[in-house]
Amino acid sequence: MLLRLLRIIWVITRFRLDTLIPLERLPWVLRTLLRLSPLRLVPIGERSRGARLRLALESLGPIFVKFGQMLSTRRDLLPEDIADELKRLQDQVPPFPSDQALAVVEDELGMTVALAFARFDADPMASASIAQVHGARLHTGEEVVVKIIRPTIERIMRQDMALMYRFAQFLALVPEARRLRPVEVVRDYESTLFDELDLHKEAANTSQLKRNFKNSPLLYVPAIHWELTRQRVMVQERIYGIPVADMAALEAQETDLKKLAERGVELFFTQVFRDNFFHADMHPGNIFVTRGKPHDPQYIAIDCGIVGSLTREDQDYLARNLLAFFHQDYYEVAALHIESGWVGENTRANEFAAAIRTVCEPILEKPLKDISFGQVLLGLFQTARRFDMEVQPQLVLLQKTLLNIEGLGRQLYPDLDLWTTAKPFLEQWMKERAGALGFWESLKRQAPELTRRMPELPVLAHQALSQMDQEKRQRRHQGEALGGIRRQLALEGRRGRRLRLGLLLLALALAWQPLAQWAAGQPWPALAAAIIGLALLAWH
Ligand SMILES: Nc1ncnc2c1ncn2[C@@H]1O[C@H](COP(=O)(O)OP(=O)(O)OP(=O)(O)O)[C@@H](O)[C@H]1O
Image (cartoon, rainbow, N blue to C red; front, side, top):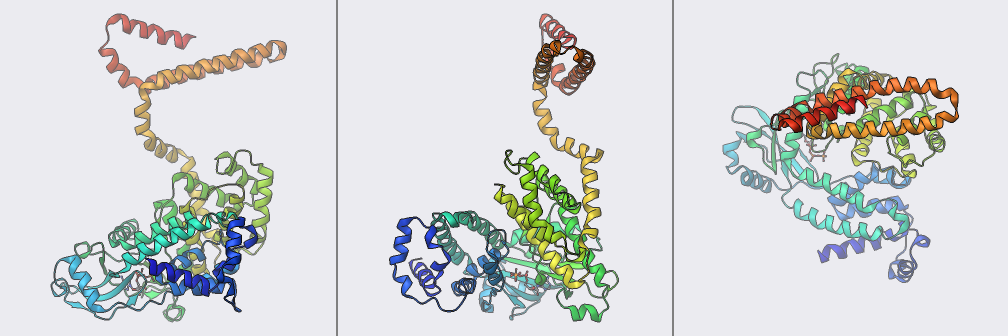
């Protein structure tokens, strides 16, 4: 640990990462310390601040490289020049030796490799910072891939994460850096990183995605071999699709690229709105296209380590905002945020709408084919943050996925009109949400809570009625001074009675079962008193 810390200090010195912190904004103690530190004797060199940060992360190893890659997508937090540089980060990690791979497999499966597989390829097909993939064949003759977690990665991860936390805590002391929420960012990273360590989770996500798209023309997901899957080993059906970035191969089989690009958008919105379960690591390396179906192109997805799902509120937020944007109704966007408490209730809708307009108008000015949903959402999050809205990590994950999907779609078919492809999805979803189906769904969801609160309903109904009466009396009092309002009051009185009766009936209907049980155990006088009480309540 100490050695690792010393190495990090050395890297910070060598790449003069201290220059990323604006000295003038530091508390005076830190400022003085840094001014006097021998660090400043090391020349900065000609490289930009982004390039120095990138090189520093690369020299600190795969966990830091992955962290940098994750940061590069947080354009809502980082300056553009740094985000651009971090995007260039590559994790070039050498594969681990095949005898170590075999040892992990045998240890996890509790049997020899020869017993589990008819063939196991010693040379890996791919090797990344956390896992390595080998080809193999089962005794049934089926070709599979075996994904194996790097043997020492967990220990390195724990060490590096502990250091990253320390560093984030230090950064949080600097007022300017606190805005970047360093500790939260590291915590987010930690949870996705450790999720990737457990291949059981990835396998479960894969199975779920497969079930969601069973028999779908949009997506094929290779099957998991559960009997050979453990926490550090996952065995999956091998696929032979065309990598989605291989334009030459897609064109050679005359793939309908327009359809493929549109299906990408459709796939994304189906995952987000129909299933509320989306693959959140949609980079081109994880997406393939089925061979031999050029006019009915189907995607294949692998690597479901990171998935996302939204709360119903966030789903609602997303759909309503995207539609409002689509209609360029910034005031509606602002009102939505205030109404649902996403930004402080003292926010002025006008000011907020103006701020959103400033960010989004230049984006929406472009021709449809150049508009990016992801950019629009990013602009919204950046603005909302200025108005003290806490953007949920799952929404950020979604926004990143959306940017990926758009990038992918436009690369396949540059004229892809995302809005037109997505609009029917959003509108259909809003219709279902607002219509009878949505009401039924929400009733089903709330049923347990309603049953729990049923016995309280008569009391709650009585409280509501008393309050209505009190308000009516107050208004009548004011109304006497204003003569002409009487007729209005009479009308309201009738409406009030109807409402009261309705409420009482509803309360009785909902509380019927517990009331009947209670009544069965009561002596006559108590029951009679209860009936008289209810009658008075209705008449009052
Ligand atoms: N089911 C499969 N069939 C064929 N090839 C596969 C399959 N699964 C993985 N691969 C190959 O192995 C590579 C790495 O797989 P995967 O993305 O699952 O690993 P990873 O360690 O998470 O990599 P990364 O971090 O780069 O996404 C893929 O790009 C693909 O070439």
